Image (cartoon, rainbow, N blue to C red; front, side):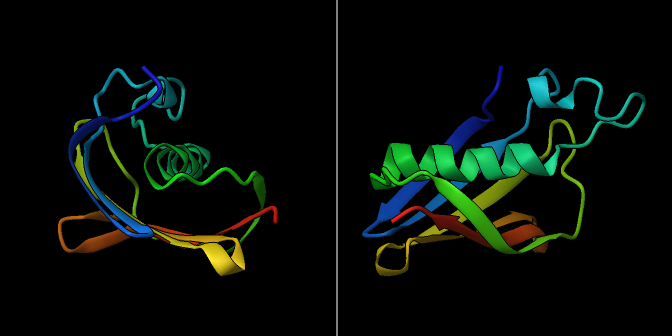
Length: 113
């Protein structure tokens, strides 16, 4: 399995809020790291783009990123919130993964015009 379980989804204009569960059998946990699996940052960026395309209608391709911060690890079986805002005029996705009241990661993804 490559994607998390979507527990709830709220979409409004150019923003999206998802409640996700990270099953222990996610592909991304395998080998990263043995004995203490954590969700890699690349998978978090992949999910932001996936859900922006699926639910916000974003068609632009990845062009880079700004200000990416990984503050706390995301672990198997954890429930997390993912918020995405699409700044269409700037070709940017602003995202945040949160666990409880703590931010796990955040950043800005640049998209091709």
